[in-house]
Length: 289
Ligand code: NAP
Image 1 (cartoon, rainbow, N blue to C red):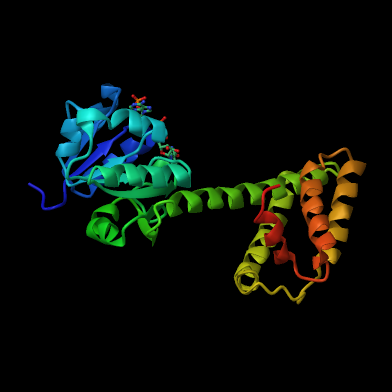
Image 2 (tube, rainbow, N blue to C red):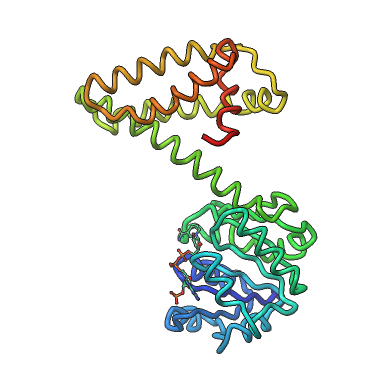
């Protein structure tokens, strides 16, 4: 017998299996359900109980983790007599903030407690502190289950708005792809001069780390709405952007990305912000294209 909270995990794809496995490892009695039953075999061999129906799975535990392909799959599953009754739903399915808020309303209309979440980790990291999992929704529900959620990784609470976890998720993706794309642009340029990607990677890592150090100070400028050019003015950056475009085109490297960024800087300069600092571009980022 275990003193740990019982948990239900619905959705045993690559991520759901990792989540269920981490709860088992931490000593939680778990109930699982998956559309394709065979994916539960290993977990059942390790001590999980396989629920015969979704309704049975929901009724089995005070806490139910959902980890499905998308929100459509969740709504397809939890209909009619398989609606949540009594269990707190924590939806770790990826989606956007509107879907998360709509799912929260859907759950509230059924009297169910609901937290939304986003997993910032790969399945192999689940159960370690490296697995950062973001949660949003009522803080009291998060606090009630935090010690159980700690079995999955670093549980991070963001706020009462159910959409926050999804927003942080996509914001993190924007950061990740932007850093990678910038590195790929530079790598493509340097390869034309015979420089190996591995050689530039060491240099690029230093630049990325250095630029990351600027973020708190730049964030202060954005939050205060004041952008004095302490390091350089946007019009100086725009001239360097033109060099990047020219250098790329001269050696036959794709210049679409730097052109896009320069077009935004040019619009900001045309609006009178040329003598302000780079983060003033937040105004271009904050409106539709
Ligand atoms: P996956 O291996 O493709 O598993 C998808 C799961 O959803 C399976 O259990 C599948 O059931 C179930 N499913 C899909 N449509 C369904 C429906 N209509 N009815 C019932 N069940 C349905 O995906 P995953 O890698 O585990 O990812 C699951 C979620 O975690 C996604 O939202 C993903 O974005 C997120 N995530 C994954 C990772 C990662 O590295 N894998 C990282 C962060 C976040 P069947 O087994 O029967 O097909």
